[in-house]
Amino acid sequence: MSDLQTSTPNTESFAALFEESLTKQDMRAGEVNLRVPRAKVRELNASCRVGEVRTNLGTEVVTREGLFPGRTHFFNAAGKAHVNAHVTAGEVDVTLTQ
Image (cartoon, rainbow, N blue to C red; front, side, top):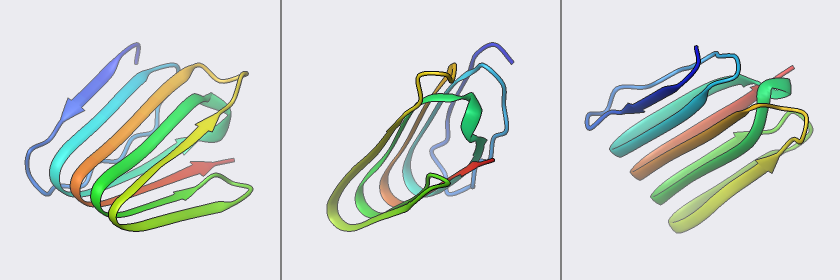
């Protein structure tokens, strides 16, 4: 895949395994589940306005929840993919695999 961008207005889950792609997952309400190879990711941003953001970076697990829980940011200079996952109300669950 060269470029991948999705916007899903319903509550379906989205999962992606990719190489060298630009991924944007943005939902109004629902749950986003991403499993991505850690070595391929250059930059990761996971966020939500109301709900929970769980990010397993491989070396640590970051969990933020509540009203305006913020975002989790990860950077890997050797990677090539930019991953952005956002939900207005719901859950974002990102796992960087080995």
